[in-house]
Length: 85
Image (cartoon, rainbow, N blue to C red):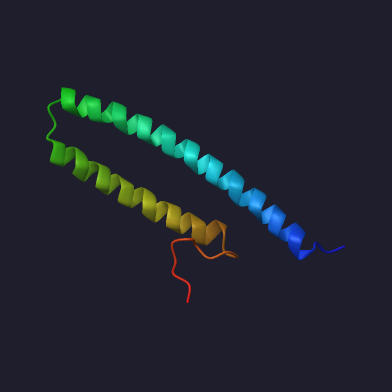
């Protein structure tokens, strides 16, 4: 028997909730790691603009990978970053 619209909505809500929980946890881990690395950069006397440049470069690579993964692994639902008309 096919799922009703309400059942589909509830299942999708649970899926997105699980996704956001994992992303929140990953963000906390990333924040902690960056904080430690900032301390290490300060100890190494790395210029603050160099630390920011490195972070932007690495974030760009990670963003590209996440966008490609979303397009590859979630082809049914448009990537959230896309603008829908």
